[in-house]
Structures are given as structure tokens and as C-alpha cells.
Length: 86
Image (tube, rainbow, N blue to C red):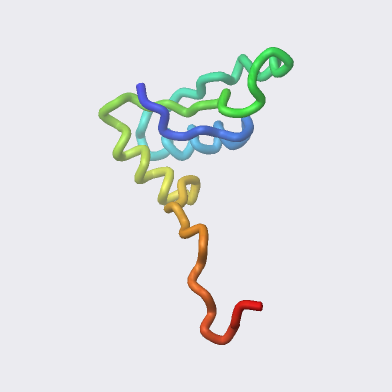
């Protein structure tokens, strides 16, 4: 199993799982039962949507098509030629 998507909340995790299942990829949400123990666990990174190893390329494509996985953006956008720095 490989992590195809790290969710920020339970709704996000199930949205990703449904996108993957609609594409014919078996997906599993791990960490769902740990949400009740938030006092003892880290608040982030608990929810993971995993797929079988051979399905990872298709899962990546399905998540990108659904808009759940974005391409990394340049942290410093190109300057607008009409604007000058202060």
C-alpha cells in the first residue's frame, strides 16, 4: 500500500476515496478511528488515503483530474511588468 493522499479532515479523506473508487481504484482511509484520540496524537497527518502499489500512477492521475492534487506552484510569482517594487 502507498499513500495516495494525505487529508486535512475526514470529509477530505472520503472525497479522495470516492474519487479513486469511481476511477475503479480500491482505496482505503487509514487513521479514521484515531480522530477521537486527538489529545494524545498529533493534530495533522493522521488521515491517509492509501491504494495498492500497482495502482499508484492511476490514483495520482485521478486525484489530479479531480483537482485534489495540484502542481507545485512557484513561491515567487513573476512580476507584472506594469508594477514596480516599492
